[in-house]
Length: 189
Image (cartoon, rainbow, N blue to C red; front, side, top):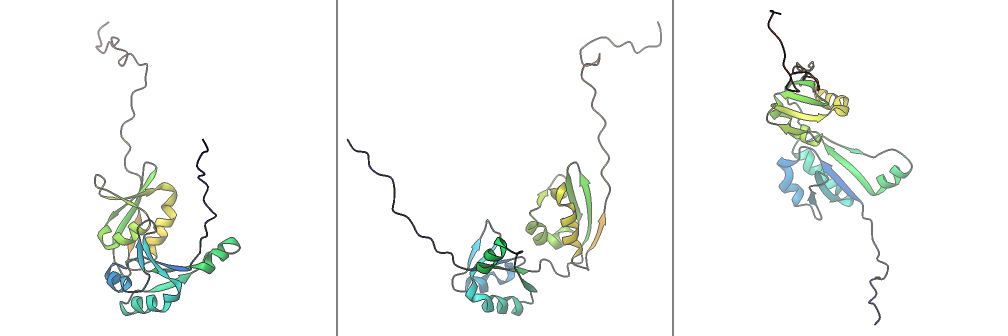
């Protein structure tokens, strides 16, 4: 009995140039929805909009008073990708005026203070809210990037805090107390 063939004829794909519009775009989401071909991309955290609609996107952002710029990545292979995709980055939390502290916490970086004013920026930086610590956590390797992004807005006051006090050291394994042995702690012999 012959097996059915699971091979399909070669498929074709077409690469279409798109803009990725990220940042503080919530207040203009209805206008962006109205642009033909625009769609929100949750994994990318922004709006995918056909590149030929660049002028419409710029007009919407300008009308709302949102600063924007076009960016293109590097050279070589990245430049080829830039030919098909441009990024329009809306400024996050412009003139927030937040007072923030960036301090180390274990292997992470913790941002505390008036974080409500820069929530969109912290989300864009892929931070996560930690209710127990009352702040936003980032990997320790992103410390410089987080500081730079928060200081980009000159109205923010960003201070670098010191590490929180470490908890007392744990007892070493193998001590008499942990083995259930007797510890003579009185002064009489």
